Length: 97
Image (tube, rainbow, N blue to C red; front, side, top):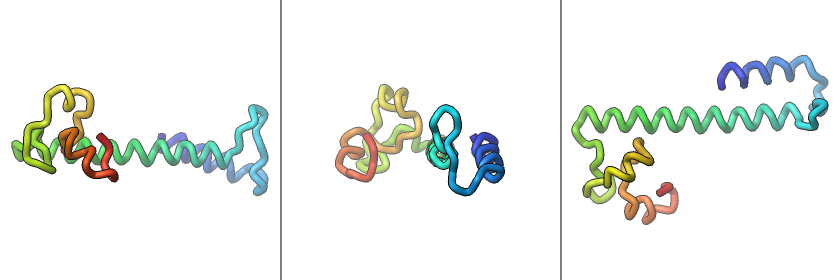
C-alpha cells in the first residue's frame, strides 16, 4: 500500500495542478485519499495486533481490559486484536464492538 500511495503521489506530480480526471473518471486526489485511508487503517490494525502480542507475552491475552473478565474465544477468533469483551466495547461509544 505504501508503494501504491507513493506511486499515486509521484504520478500526480506529473499531472496538471488542477487535478484532471483520468479516463475512467476518478480524480488523482480521490485515489490518493482512498489509498491514504486504507494505509492508515492497515497501520492501525498492525498496531492493534502488536498490542495483542504484548498481551500474549504478559499472559493477559483474552482478558478484558475493561472489566477484567474473560473474552470469549468466539470473539477472539473474529477479532483477535481485541482487548475488550462485547459488553465493555459497547459501553464506550469511541470503541468498536
